[in-house]
Amino acid sequence: MFDTSELVINMGPQHPSTHGVLRVVLRLDGERVVGADVVIGYLHRGIEKLCEHRDWLQIVLITDRMDYVAAASNNLGYVETVEKLMSLEVPPRARYIRTILAELQRIASHCLWLGTHAMDLGAMTVFLYAFRERELILDLFEDYCGARLTYNAMRIGGLPLDIPPRWDEKVRAFCDILDTKVYEYEELLTRNRIFLERTRGVGVIGGDEAIAIGLSGPALRGSGVPRDVRKDEPYAAYADFEFNVPIGMAGDTYDRYLVRIEEFRQSTRIIRQALDGLPAGPILGKVPRLIKPPAGETYHAIESPKGEIGYFIVSDGKSNVPYRFRVRPPSFCNLQALPRLIQGHLVADVVALIGSIDIVLGEVDR
Amino acid sequence: MPEPTRTIAPPAGPPDPPPAPEIAVPSFIATLHERLPGAVPRVSYWVGDWTLILESPRLLDVAHYLRDAPDARFNFLSDVTASDWPVRAKRFDVIYTLYSIPLRHRVRLKIHVADGEGVPTVSGIWPSANWLEREVFDLFGVRFEGHPDLRRILMPDDWQGHPQRKDYPLEGPGELLLEGPMEWLRLRKTDIE
Image (cartoon, rainbow over all chains, first blue to last red; front, side):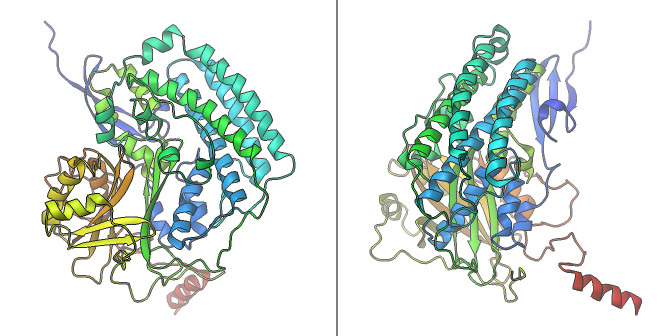
């Protein structure tokens, strides 16, 4: 007879499906995962410490480097927190353009997620399709601010730049393109037998457990919890727009996929409304030349493509650097659920689950 | 552009102002005072955020109450973090940011902790506290008692020190802080002499 014993293997930190430098120590019984330990920190750059030594305007640049596929969302969360701390009024035009940028960013991030997630599961074509559309968004951002990845696109109290001429027409054209392309993605995956077999019933987590373990964003909504910061605690201009919050029912990898696919459509819906109602006016509010928030502390959260990104900032009111700068990184908190999700599944499902919670290691490790 | 400066005299803590009399206190705070008298000695309100400031022995009582009470229902622990105020005897603030998904409101809990003093873990109440408390332990050195798995999480296991403390330098332990070219020059000059 053969003897059976547990096998411990390292997945990562250099593994193509971990989307960065994530190491998962798997304990296997044959093909089944009986335990997992997630080891992170390989990309730790001390961003929180660094931000406590940089002045308020320089930090916008550093926040770009956390979730580097959704830099504009990170910028938005940071500048809104400082505006809350200083009780600054942001002009409506700036709020509308911020909303457009944040939603474009959500589409770009979801495109990257869709491409890599499908490729992990063996569907190479979707990767090429999704990156084709992401490229169009990067072009739009390049038109807006000149950068393609780390935008530095927000300022405390408003925006550095107004939108260039005819940019709104380009964004509208892009929304029309994307709406047809989402059907193309769905044709490739939603009823695809292989994709269904790999995702249905994999990594099921119920709503209450998902809340308790700290999931947020599409990963939480996939479990049927209608929690979206854009609806519950509206920021930027989201209170002015109509959109739906898609939720899943089964709480498995397939439902998390469906939620994100529907978010593509809701995002273009928001962008169209924002372009229709784009008010005229200034793009920068009345901001003191020297940014020095009064002493105090505050927490402010927005809905990044990955989930709830929150900033907790303490100002001492005297120096021109924050006394304490803390980010609540959605990827970090969502990754915590990974050992629970992969319990009892096959090794091959681990890549499906890492893809389905959509992490960016730059944000996990900071 | 002014040079970023570090405060010379470090502040002794955030002001945590009490709510102005015209601000309506949320009902869950009023019932919390009734049900657990004396558990929350200070309440603060600042730019729309409510903070309950309490002592660490009562933390678990208050946390249990806030999660389960029908008018509070804080079922989502957004964040656990800390801030360091070295001039104080109890130098750390440990801050819990709570959110209620059914009732859509927020509150923060804050406790003051001395260096080396243990804090009861809330990971039995909100399992999401597991990694967040590990991060606070790693970066600040606050010990969470009863935590299921208190190890470093971001820094390597054999790291010395806790980087987010205010007395920890930005550029590595024992290294000099060289911010501008003039500081490099001054160093070179003393080398030559």
